[in-house]
Length: 431
Image 1 (tube, helix red, strand yellow):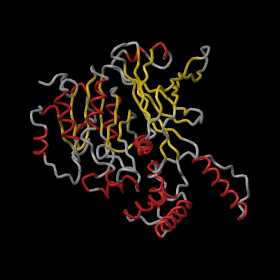
Image 2 (cartoon, helix red, strand yellow; image 1 turned 30 degrees about the vertical axis):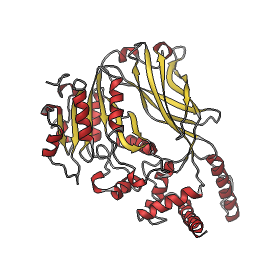
Image 3 (cartoon, helix red, strand yellow; image 1 turned 45 degrees about the vertical axis):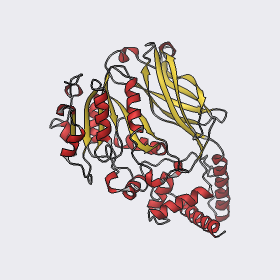
Image 4 (cartoon, one colour; image 1 turned 30 degrees about the horizontal axis):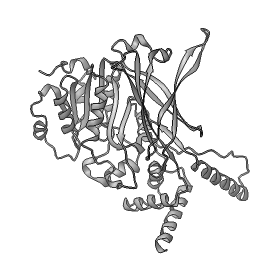
């Protein structure tokens, strides 16, 4: 009983702090979808109380509705039938549980571990950033996908068309769905510019949305139709494009992830934008959990990092600890990279990561196994990392020096003219 009373007290304190709202809202913040209550009542004390009661009822109603997320993805030409496009659809079905006492108590316990004071701007952001970790996963949900495009209308103006793709599978016990669909190019006449994709030009981006079965809830994202030839960038996120400070330990990692606005590694957006202009496609492969993807997306849009597909880690708070949230996987990342490369045997890849964890070992192993596909490896040196250039040379032993580069400032890569031509990096085959 004492434990339950303490949980209720801490949850009440968290609820009171969250009710203040506003302070500490970050630029990468994502709000759970909650139906708004029209402001039709005068702002008197009695009627304000009625309005707040209406809002709470709306929140409870929303928490009973299953929500859906769909993540940015890519499409590739089928290797068996070049007339078809293979599209991967990935996302998540869940209930927000905005009024869960257990959720609030768990969040408050983590806040205490990080020494966050209730009512501070850091606490307000913390509540928002941890919201996707505390939801209830929904299994067995069917999702329909829609690819949206502009189509000519009698030669005047443009209208939106839709290609509907029902999912052959349902969400798993963790609420996630991961399904593939093969679409004949003739079914996508207005979606894909065939003349562009026949060349070495960059990917074509199309809007898509996921519609959740009978509930009708929707989520929007992008599909990148990637041609079979050209350059692709496979990039890490933490300490590669976003300052996380992994070598400094779990407390600093969680602080930079859950309490502050995300900060870009200065100059990486310029480097990636330069490669994007040259037609490169982007795939972001990271040990960060899927629960952070909506915040990553807002961060990328804010700082100007190119869009691309995301490949993150499944994380269940019920059977893992928050302090292991970013623990690098020596299996997940290599498998994800190899899977991406398998769909594009004629494309060349740049692998971009950092020296803070296992990227050098993972990338070196992938290059040894795929010498013709890997054009170059870039490893960013991170403050606090104990690796030396000599230790990295041991990691890349047997790999020609012209196939890998370490850097701290992206300007070291771009050079004085601010440009780096992808086709000048390395020949297709390793000498």
